[in-house]
Image (cartoon, rainbow, N blue to C red; front, top):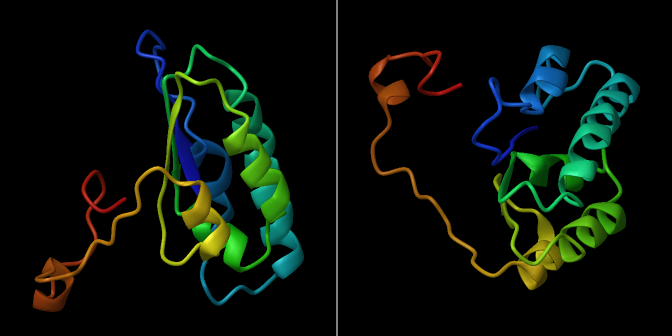
Length: 130
C-alpha cells in the first residue's frame, strides 16, 4: 500500500510507496511476518499525516488489502481516519475493505473493468499502472 500527501509545496511527495512498495508485496506472500512489518512501517509514516491539518488530501492506495489480510489493525486505521482534521479528505483504494470502511466513508465507488490493455497483451507500464 502507498499514500500520497496533499502538500503542494513539497519538492517531492512523501508517498508511502517509498516505504512499502520496495518491500515487494504480493497477494501470495512468501513471508507474512515481513509483510506485516513492512505494512506497520508504512503506517508509521502515514498515521501522523492523518493528524496534520496541512495535509488536505491523503490517498491510501490499496490499503484495503492491508486490512483484509490483517496486516494492520483495523481499529487503529478506522480511528485515525475518523479523527483526522475536518478539512482533510482521505481516499482509500482497493477491493473489499469490509463494512466498517464503508460505514465511515462519505463516498464508496466501484471501478469496473470494461476493457483493459493487459488483456490485449500490454504489460503494466511505469507511470501509468504503477
